[in-house]
Image (cartoon, rainbow, N blue to C red):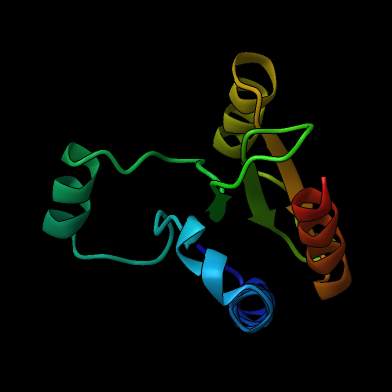
Length: 118
């Protein structure tokens, strides 16, 4: 289940990004894997491709170093689930994308600005 602090951080980051980069806003999107759902809805979403452990955001914008970013929000003490670790390993080993854990607004701002500049 999502942590409220993570939700607040993610919302602040999206708000900043949409203000700074409105022309890129559709390339940064949430993957709604978490949250509580009715059993039937959860079953249908799984059939439609919802995957446990996928990062909170995906940024489909290439840079010199990486084709895309997978962004996972965690609190300072937050830990990845086993499924999240598995997804990170797949991204890191099987793609030319970059998986990053964000623990603060400054982390997010820095990685986005660096990625876009390159």
